[in-house]
Length: 313
Image 1: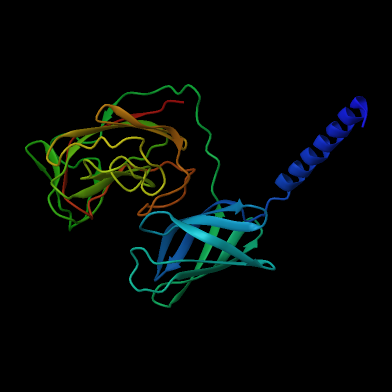
Image 2: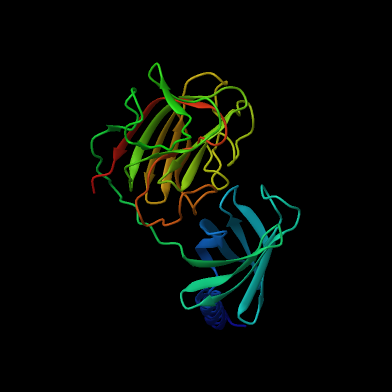
């Protein structure tokens, strides 16, 4: 083949391959993407999360977060005509049976049913997770104290509340209720000083939806379900937890989905997008403002300082 013809042949082949790639991208399966689910369970509306993506040419895979626990992998999302199926093994659910899901796309929603680990069937529906746009140069407002060092003003409490203020320290001495701010926020910087006893476990929920794990994990390898992780979704680049009983700090910046976490003075997660809600979230209405929630239903924890700096623009 002469050099000029070879060049034209290569150019034509490249154009064909490029067009094929564009066609493939345009023909993405309508199930693909991130979906916020609501499971109707025993009179409750349980927020959950589903992600579906391509693996190779034809296989659909995914991740799923139930109302509690961490995101878990879906080995395959199987399709038969307009109906899809997937199953996941139990995590913290009672029973040994897999959770089984069946659904179909109806308009811009997914709808279907879930067979729980106890064999009972529940209905669910899902909408596409919203696109959250981060401000490039956010302007910050005045820093506010979430905890005033005296009482629980500004926090929602219930009759069985175990949270107390002891010598200026916000204290949960035993598992009980979570503590939720009355005010809601969009984007913010959050500063927290906390400590916990040996073996304890707690967390801070941003907008009530994304848990930053607080746990006694000094010396362990970093993990999304351990100290400093966005529970089940984002793993810190380093484990910087101190020993139980020592005061520690988080400085967290959340703008849209983009989160930066500085733990004990070290940046362990830098401007990473949080894919979706974590287990235990109050809701999955991600486009709306949300509160700060302290996990109090696991282990003992204390807070000396809790301050928030909300965005202005």
